[in-house]
Each structure stands twice: as C-alpha cells, then as structure tokens.
Image (cartoon, rainbow, N blue to C red; front, side):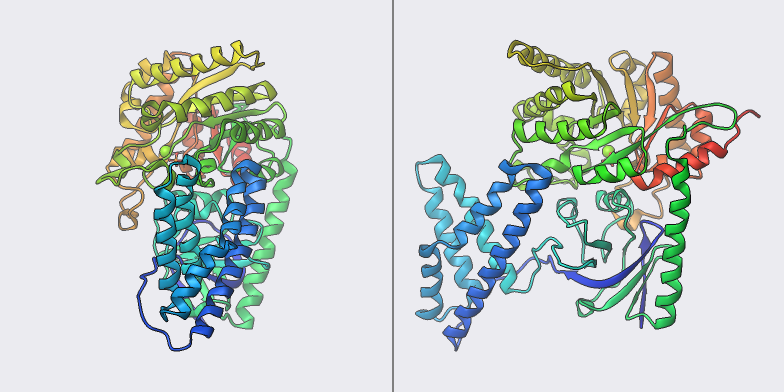
Length: 540
Ligand code: PEP
Ligand code: MG
C-alpha cells in the first residue's frame, strides 16, 4: 500500500479505481519508422478511439448545453472520416515513413491552412476544427487522455492539474473523487468539487503508474491510499457508510425553515455551475439558487453559445426551481476561466485583468445575447440578475442601461417577460468602500468572499504556495463583510454571501449576528447549515 498526503477540498471518503487523466502538452517529433503497416494501424486505432470520444462528448453536451452547441462534436467525428485527410496521413506514413504523430499533425496543419485561405466564411471557420481533430488524434497516439473522464465504471480521477473548463466537462455520474498534483484550495476547480460533493485532494505526489489501481481518498485526513489493505478498505468503507447515514439523518430537516431558536430566519440558497447540479439542489431542499455561475455554459461550449441555447438552459433551471428564486450571475469569464474562442490575450496579472463585467461592457454583443436569453427565461419563473467584479457606479449604470435596452427590444418583439430583480456581486474592496452609492442602484448585494479575500489581502487565490496566507477569517475580510451588510441595509438592499465562506460553520453565528439575509452554498452544505442555524440562539 502507498500513502500520499495532500490538501483536502471536501471531507468525505471515496473508494474506487484510479483513472489517470494525462493532459500534458505533447511535443511532436519527426522520425522515420521501420514498419509503416503497423504505424498506419496505430493511426487507424487512434482515429476509432477519437470518434468514440466525440460521440460520448456529443451526448453529454447535448444534455447540458443543447443540441445546437453539441453538434460540433458530430462535425468533428465526420471530419475524422474524411477520405482526403486520411489519405494524406497514409501517404506520409507509408511513402515517407513518417511517425503517425508527425503525419497527423502535418496533415492537420496543411488542411487548416487550406481552409483558412478559402473565401467562404464557413470553410474558414473549419480551420480551428481541423487543428482540434488533429490534436485529439495526436494526443491519443501519444497516450494523453482527452476523454474528459468519460468512462464506463466509476473512478477516481488523477491529473497533474485540472482547469475549470476540464473539470466542468467531466462525466460526473462516474466521478468518485479527484486528486491532483497542482491547484489551490480556493480555485474554481476546488469549488466545483465542493459543488459536486466529491472528495478531492490537491498537492499530492501522484504517479501515472497508479492508473487502474484501487485507491481510497480520505478527505478527513487529506490522504490517498493506493492499493489499500483489506483492513483499511474495511474501516474506511465503514466510515463512508457512516457519512451516508449522517447525511440521511439530515433529511428530516427538509421542508423546515432556516430559523434560529430565537426566531431569526434567513434564506439558504445553492451555488450551481451546471444544469446537472440541479438534482442535488432539489434533493437538498435549497430555497433557491443564489449563484448560477453562467460562465460554465461558455466553458462547456466550443463556440459562443447562442441566445436560443442559453435561453433553453436558463428556462430549464427556472422551471425546475418552480417559483423559487434563481440568481443568474452574468458571464464571469477571464482569469482562470478561459475559453479559447474568446481569444483573450495572455496577461501579466489575469486576476486583475480583462475579465467578467469588463469583458461584457467592452464586447457588448456577447453581453446582449446573454441578457436577452435571461430576460426571456424570466417569463417562466423568478429570475434575478447579478453583475460580477463591479468596482464602480459607472459599470452598474452601464450594465443596467444595456439590460433595459434588451428588455425594450424584446417587448417590441412581442416577448412576455417577468420582473427581474437586479443585484451586484461585492467582491472587490472598491465595491465595499462604495457600497452606499452602489446600493442606491440595485436591489441586492451578494458578497463573493473568494475574490473579496483575494483582493483585500492581495493574495492570488490560484497560487497554492499562498494557501497558508489566504485567511478568509482575516479581520479585514470580516470587517468588509460587515460594512457591506450595513451599507446594503441602510439603502433597502438585502445582502447575502455566495463565496465559499458562506458554508463555513465556524462563521455561521457571526454572519447571523452581522445581519446577513442569505447564505448561498454548495448543495451538499444546505442541510448541515440548516441544522446549525436551527441550533443557534442569538438572544443573548
Ligand atoms: C466569489 O468570488 O466569492 C464568487 C462567488 O465568485 P467566483 O468564486 O466564481 O469567482
Ligand atoms: Mg468571484
């Protein structure tokens, strides 16, 4: 048995086989091969595997982001069947005795350039697709996994690192837990693990050789056991069952109010990143959605999601919540959340860079598409909109102006729209210090403590070396929260917390005493939080 330790993201036990997700960048070499037949068979097998992956990705994307967005995966599968493309690879392998990786890469580049030089815009757009399919086949040939965790049996995912765009594409129905060498406890990847309620460890000294081996993640002690002994399987298996029993006990809190013993009531909502998180919102009896991280729709897409696709997603969330509040945060892309098709420049300081509302106010067409989709969904339930990364009154006014223009446009097109509450995220010191003015413009504040901590303490939340310094209980952070609550209340705004701190049991009483109106947490934290709140007595 091998034991390695790391930092735990979620207290819990996961037991299963390891699937190593090798997402390292492939370096392509050009060398002569001695057996062209064998090399070409290797290529054909890789193509078959790539087609299988693309069909699986298509089905998953269809369920999560709609048929129109999912279609691209089928287009890619068809491109892999193209005779000209295959013949070009064959010639390089058989006639010129090139290794398959080089042959596929070179053919991909040649075809991509040919597409790029065409007059037709549709054909030009195929240039990126060509590079994409070539890179998928090259990765398979080089043993780098692009399957995004698609598997037939449940597994523990192991990887060097996982970007939010990769995490969001994982097949959650089979994911028991994940373990990475890199990453920080405050990153979006860690947040996604908490949202999915799966044990995860970061900072672990992992090995590719463990692929397929049995393992246990012990999230309580921040350990992974590879090839565990029977005794350990037995004792941690029992602990896992005990956890499930404790969770089942909390079920009797379903339908009960979040009210302290002395009668103070608050709302407990959920954070989601995906439509697939909805079942867990309902199962855990959240009173609403306090943060829908809409950027994950974009991260799950190969191109800008259309108004229609987004509308379908927002509508399905709103309908499923059946009259409960759904707060949709407008696009918060940038920094660690990158989608290639946005073509954002590389930046020296991405967390302080071109992200969130700054992108939306600069590239208005993207913003308007999203706002129209959200407004249309408002006809089907209770929708609130909030803008992220606000630092000034000007931004709020501009965002509201664009929202109003979209509303008028939709009304003139004959659309039916519901009333939409407007709020902002308070996640910068500037927003805290201007909270009195900002509160005049909106109906609610939602405090994003993840970024508020990052910007107040000047600590990059992505940098694992700084985890020991990232103290979300820092007095400056708590003071900023109190200031925001007070300013909001002075101007008739309700104030919530949707950052990870909202679920911190050590702070529940403090937040209640500060006067917080709402806490929005990962679905798995709703019932434990409800229990805590109901056991509190704030009368002294
Ligand atoms: C936050 O910053 O606290 C927040 C909720 O937003 P995100 O974690 O997505 O940046
Ligand atoms: Mg944030």
